[in-house]
Image (cartoon, rainbow, N blue to C red; front, side, top):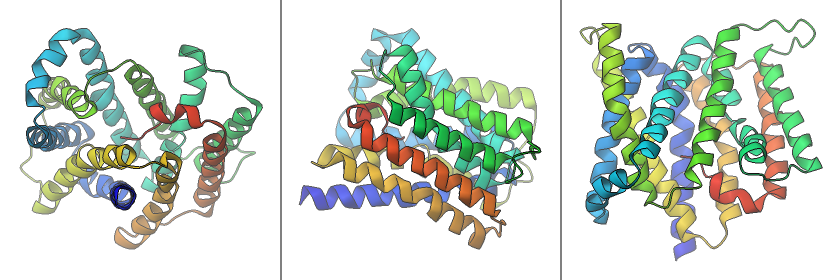
Length: 301
């Protein structure tokens, strides 16, 4: 029974994550990246607050923060503030298919950063995985014109790669976090929201021209990219006796995402994006086969 529930939660999380690239583009049509981050963070914080209330962990929020305030301040500034602001800007500058494919190389970035900061050994197979994945990034960024190295948006590609560093760094810092994971994520949002509001006010752009569709899209992002889906994924990993089987479901997400981008918003999927994505996923598969011991820090949120 638990395995069925784990599979259901895992599949639900993957399907929801598959929709977020489309939701990002729909939202960015009406919001600036900082507006999108602010509103989506508020929605996500509300959703996680309700989850904590249902779990009976609300009383842990203040003591958890007070016990290590600088640690949670740092986590909140990295994720969601810096990570999503940079990721949303990358999506604003690049086709969504390119941005989401490059972002999937974060697990390879994690391998390199874990070696630097956690002293984990990089094996030969990891170098192969890194080589394949970053070659895939180059294929996507140059749209297959490797010799010219002509990037459609160098800034967009750079921001997408920077987002992988921030996300990997966030999970490395989280290896030392002993608190309830949902409480920890909620604290990140509570820390980030005042900074996001301040940046949004500084930007000085209002919401007068935002349509109902825009509000629905940004709320969807807050619920299903930054909030509830994280809870579903954690629940799946907690219930299963076969973590690898659940973790491998995530490999379907980018391909489902490309289908949705093509059918819902009509984005043209360049053949080089598909080739590059296959290279990145191949690298991730190689990494999964060799690094079962790292599953605890490679769970996606």
